Image (tube, rainbow over all chains, first blue to last red):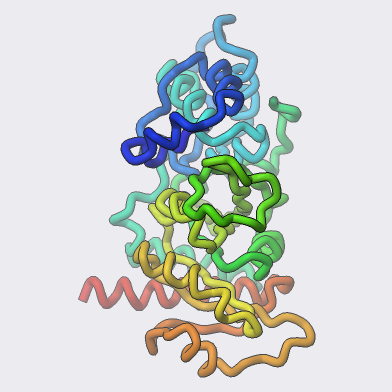
Length: 133
Length: 201
């Protein structure tokens, strides 16, 4: 698969990838482009949209199964990758397309600026301390 | 591909906690105890996923089957802790070797900080990971993972070997023990609070 995180630096490397490594991801994603770098992080949380329409048959089996998996609640992109064993790049393409289609909703992780937020750090600390009982 | 489309209820993030997803990296050299640490603390069975990485070195010789390829994959271990009704914490075990440098861009972005696990008997193995942590500007604490039968080096010796700043927290811990591992994270988060307070001052 391609290293989507650094597309501007890796064009040569991509070209050298063995064809076999690319064929299956290409088929699964229907040849769609990898999504923008920041659209899905490892801890972006994903679930099915509440007002989901009837799922049309044109969704691929992989997409149908992703919707099935996401219907039980929120999961992070990393967890979905772990459960499905899909390569992250491929998974992000599928999630991106399902989100665009209105089937999935996402919650972005805490933005960079809030990582040093006093209240957030205190809540993390309290949560950890509560585990010590 | 999806062998278990219907997951157990516990697999999903607790309702409400999806409001705030944060991550902490658990880093360190090969076999220092990252996976053990995550397994000790995670409320879900730790999962792993694969990230592609570009080979940095031509002399990679300790990963089976990667010779002759320009890219290979690396397994990322991760786990999850629900911390409150509205906060969920993900722990990502991130390999510290220099050849995983591309992966670090993704991992470091949006992380609260990092816990660097070190083996007191193999401190020089931690140099590469220390470089990566500092390059990416991650706030970190050091966890001396105290293995059985290893004489514990003093904190001072670790500080000197790793050339730590005086304020960098160092904690002796056991990645197999839940209380000890939780304490290590608490030490890190307290340090993050101190840094945040300085930034706001």
